Length: 291
Image (tube, rainbow, N blue to C red; front, side, top):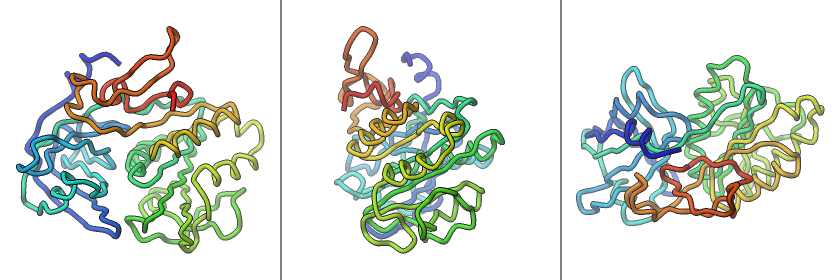
């Protein structure tokens, strides 16, 4: 995607903190009032936030949910460095500088109605955002598989939505997706009740193998998470000859394509090229990413 559309849709707003909830393992859900970002954001978009006046460089956070009518934007993040540690201290009523939405979003293809959403750790938010859009499109039958090696930032519950082809006992789901009528299951290697013991790609492969050929041909993967997970998603998609889109996460300085500090190697018709995750992505076709 060229730079002009990004310049046209990126807004800088003083975003008031409406809610800031802490969860185990230094995970936080942050909701801010940023109406222009909320109006323009699409699944796969992110925002660049100033965490604290002590840290002038912003931090990129994937957008998890928006409400364009009331103007709020919600993020799930993990405090892993100095910037996000300072962000975790910010309180309701305080104001952050927010720049967004930024980035190339996921692209839907109506002929691929069996959307499989794979989210790992802090890669879960884009999958929730995508699910929020798919729930309003009757032709899609999404299935989400979310994985974490730390406690999930929500209280898992047994799902009442049946998903044929899953191992017995894999019943844990995310309550929000359940409320939306979206089939979802959880995975972990930590032995959490009702979760699949393995990776998100393990459960997705198990499910795919049970699908009739005509239904498998309708599958498209959408994924966000750590690079090893996304590499595994690309391999799984290639194994079954299915399309996949992956949202990459990189450290960013400017987030608007100026510094080229977030480049990754991407296969193009002209050969390998360095592409900027912020504005050429963060969403790329999985087969194009040279992991």
